[in-house]
Structure formats: C-alpha cells, structure tokens
Length: 156
Image 1 (cartoon, rainbow, N blue to C red):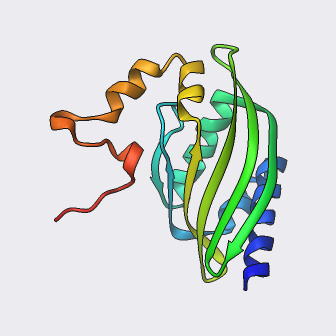
Image 2 (cartoon, one colour):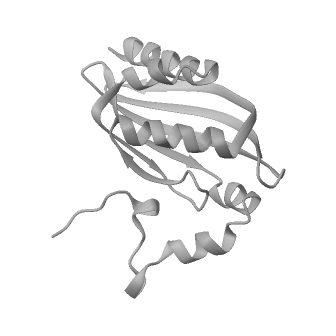
C-alpha cells in the first residue's frame, strides 16, 4: 500500500506540473480538505474538489513557479509526506520568494483525503505586500486563531 500511495502522489504532482487540473482533481476524495496557512491570496482552508479548483485557479493567477522540485516522498500506511523546494514570482508585484516545503497527506480509498502545506508563509505573503494582512489574520476578535492558520476547527 505504501508504494501505491507514493505512486498516487507522484501522479498528482506530475499532473500539477503539466497543468492537468482535471487529472489532479480526479485523485481527490469528494470531501478532500486542504489547509495552506498564511497570508497570501491562495492561503486558507479548502474543502471539496470545486474549492480546490478555485485554489489552483487563484494560485496560477497570482504566481509563476520558476522552480518546483519534489526532493523526497515518504510514506507510511495512509500518511504521505512530500518534501521539496519552490521558487516563485508573484505576478502582480514581480517579487520572488523561495522556500522549502512539506506537504502532508492522508490517503483514503486510493485517493487523497486531506493535505496540509507547510512552508515559509511569511516569505510568500511579503512578496504580495501582505505582511499586514497576515498579522491581522493571525487573530480574529478576542484573539481567536483564524481558520486559515488552524484548519476548520471544531465546535464544542
């Protein structure tokens, strides 16, 4: 199963690099959850294929990836971690950011069920001129952490 999950991830990343959004989305569960913390326009929590389509549309509209390298894929059961490096240009400002990343996935039924993107979110947000926005988004009213930084949360 671990080998199958690595192949699944390789296929998804290959589809991303080719710009084959439909192929990429086919490999997500209907209720896929994505959390990309940070202050950039494409940051935040998404759920489902249509929200992921919107995520990738926003990502392509706002940045050009000058480098996107997968250095390693680690899998253990239903957990897969992708470690890599990215360098991108923010199209609106022309500014560049470069950061290592780790993407953590859970696989269910041969598809990706959830993902968490970890990288230097401050470097990316600053290139958008978003550092103030990021600071404001860190806490909402009464200091409650914003969902873009912590996921969907739970109500108790």
